[in-house]
Image 1 (spheres, rainbow, N blue to C red):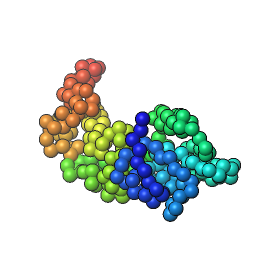
Image 2: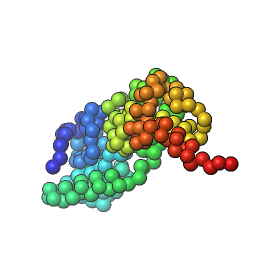
Image 3: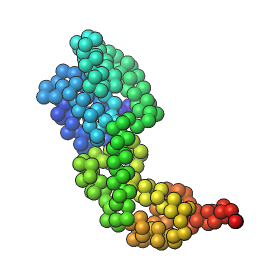
Image 4: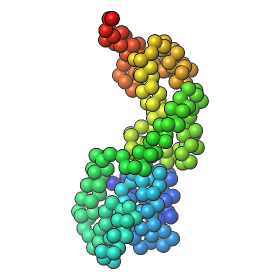
Length: 219
């Protein structure tokens, strides 16, 4: 049912996060070096991993321990012993809820910061994924995982989508030529710009421009 990566303590789990796409974390509370509470708090306060659901497991159930787990940001708390069906149901429900919920505050801040950076450098033909990772202080793998999970876009697609969104506004609202718009958005090759535009919008820039002309009322 699932592809599983195993870590023997919280520190090993953090290292796995840096190199793998992780959809959900199931952690025992009692672990050496970094326990389940610390791991959950690290994940939920992290810009890179806050979107990942966390299930904490304990063999010492108490209201105090449950509250401590929830205060560390855990999405669910399971007491031993438990059945596979119970665990599988929790996993399924959390993944469904995650796919349907809005971005949390940290995710929103993450996307907003990335978007603002792209807009501020939108005319730069050298704008790259490496510049985004430097700005956000994360690795390429972490950036890819985060964007893929939140928006189902790669970092390059994220940059291009913002550029195309701006391009569409410029085509509709200004009298600039398609070539002028492509250069203003850092595309050195108008042909590549047109292909990228169509991939995101389903129309060529000229088709959008012609539609605008047809829909403009005659004064």
